[in-house]
Length: 168
Length: 389
Image 1 (cartoon, helix red, strand yellow):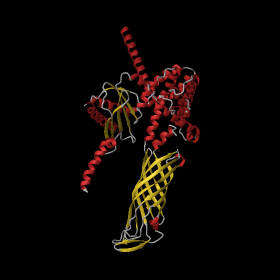
Image 2 (image 1 turned 180 degrees about the horizontal axis):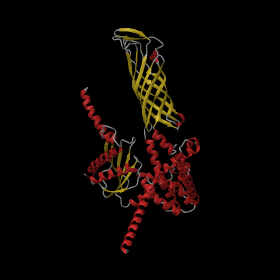
Image 3 (image 1 turned 30 degrees about the vertical axis):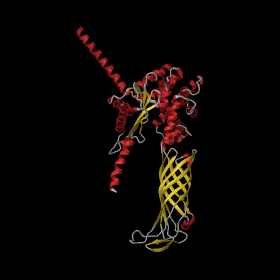
Image 4 (image 1 turned 45 degrees about the vertical axis):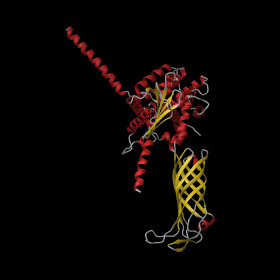
């Protein structure tokens, strides 16, 4: 009985931590050149300090790790709406790829952050995902500000790891 | 004397300057954003009626400069830009889409207040003044939007037209236009994304059930039994997953025998139950009805001898079996709310083994009547506010 517990408990924790923070490479070819970063914030719908915090954390973490040649577009789109916006026509000649980041918080405490890197033809290159509910341990339900910071750093860590694998 | 005169003049001038600075700061400290906003709400319609539209934009710039962007200032600025033909589609992003949804919420709220005078009457004096001011402001912006719509012949599927429809208060027409999938406008893109996001949200379910359980063949000896129970679970997409616990009671109509410690005991006692995982696949959905194909797996059993749990060595015997069940069920939602009444018919494959006693081979049919709640408030209200059917 105890043996089973010793096996099952680590499997359980490993599953939680995998679900909390994971990524996937979809194609072997990376993106070189300018990557347009577009953040779709569904935590505060792009309003107020939480949005500024989210943007700041993502930009700082990307900058710290010197990942990709990022240009941030301060507008909120997802893939579908970006392709319909006038910005697409503006960027399609200079962009080698697009990095879409979407963040949501169903309970305004935990944050689920997803990063999707597309090439210039909008083919998915890789994804990175971090969910603070599964991926972080908090003694008390975290403040949204803390969860935003953890989600951004967690997702970018996975993104960095996958990107390194891709460029290896 | 001249020096004294010059000194006096300098001193007076300095005092005047100081007094002016103080006067200015006093004025500034008294005018806050609320004052500017209240003034704007009454002054801007006045500018419009006097056809002083340049004054409107100057005031909007001052307003946004002093108090940052607000819903009202954005609305007026956009109307001004659309009328002048200088509106840039680059302004439309998710935040902008939310702004239009807020506009629809405001309109719905205004309609609610207009049709429920008792709510308005219950407002305090200040709240009532705010309500009248905002409702007059909406009347002005809707008239302005309508005027622009009348003057221009916007093509179908144009974002400008959709914005004006929202501002003019043509809510149904606005949603009809942005939900039209043949329009590949930016607003249509946000509408599709928002609907699919809300639709992907899971729903939570819980409820009580009652019904009957009727075994067949040799198991028919056990007779028909009423059931009560409870269940909880979740639905994601078309798949419903529940954990169900139920109890079957009332003694058997005929006597049956069980082997207990090498002796056969005749009994009519019956207290059964089921605990299992039930799944359902949604076959049909209308706003008020859902039909499911059902399946389930669980432990099914019953006590054959009545025993007092407080007394040691009382004879007790339970007969159990794996229960695999399949069937069909439907849920009827009450007034398109989350509460529903449901009916399920399941065929249960069971194999009760009663070694040495009455043969209970045979399966059973169960009919369940459900009283439950299934839904997700965010999903329900979100889709409703998007007029999604």
